[in-house]
Length: 256
Ligand code: PGA
Image (cartoon, rainbow, N blue to C red):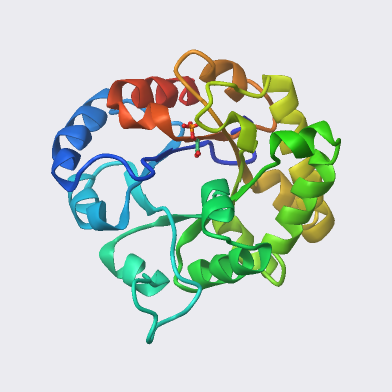
């Protein structure tokens, strides 16, 4: 991380876990354990049905609430979808876009990811844009090209004045939920590459200011080493965010 130029952000991604009735206790524990964190931004991304409880439970504290998905459409006849304005109206501040599970299981394309990024920004939500390669792609030696392309396509047409709201999360697919983490050096190398792609698109000042998270089996043991890397500005945490003590320990590592 490099707090001189950019924010460190630690985000939890509950995925399809926990129940709405779990949020109260979870939030009380997390608020207590993370109360001293002043140097990093924190948020939890909950399933849609828990967002009202989560917004209420984290009111008046430094922990923000995010969604895990949104519609690319503004409003209308789109049964089962949730719009950016609906999230915004609820008090949600962030939204994960293009997570590899959505790309792999729900067919989300780079084009749809781009439309969702624009929809989020249009409603003043902060998108956390996920990119990352599969194991096969890493073995084929195309990681840098693939991740560069994902970043460019996700940000296509996004004006530079919106970039201060955008977070990129580099999540190698093979490291998600597997217990395998990229080495801190390998993760940093790709985060650095992402920063250079953003430099090419938006210039040095914006690339220095953009927060780039690492995600994929981040836990209390490996977090400090990852955050010590110059281009890793926090983490998107899945499994370990389900336990508020583990999540607070990761926040503590980012708060150093
Ligand atoms: P994990 O998930 O921490 O459980 O690997 C990360 C993510 O998918 O965002």
